[in-house]
Length: 195
Image (cartoon, rainbow, N blue to C red):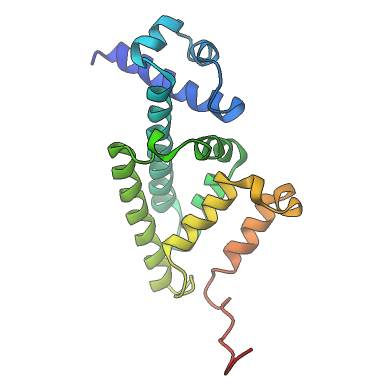
């Protein structure tokens, strides 16, 4: 692919992610083309229908998540700080809006596609490595796994409409409280016998 064609493709996908975040998955294709600074014809040459474009947005989303996790792991002073930074970044309102919009779609739209599945598996594996490193460093509870963090992100980013109203009004506060509960030393010892 020529460099200018690649740039146009990237501009369209980034613009689509922004517009879908703001207006949902049924946002007009014309609005996406306008945001990308290309003609509608160019958009349709690259993506013959909405399904193809949304699939590309899904791939863009998971690539962005993987890149952010890698950046957090390379910059933070320790694994716990990297986890904190990444989860906080992922749950910011703009990114959460895109995750929410994508979560409304049938999974075959993007989740079951080979590229998305491959990148998601790599992202989870790297995230798991960070969790294990934090546990080895003694900063994270041993009974917390990467799946707990993925579920937490899923609730705060993909399904914020299921949060109770006080939590939805201050998601950063409640996310912080939940993350604090995953720190080493935060576990409540099991009771001896039935409660």
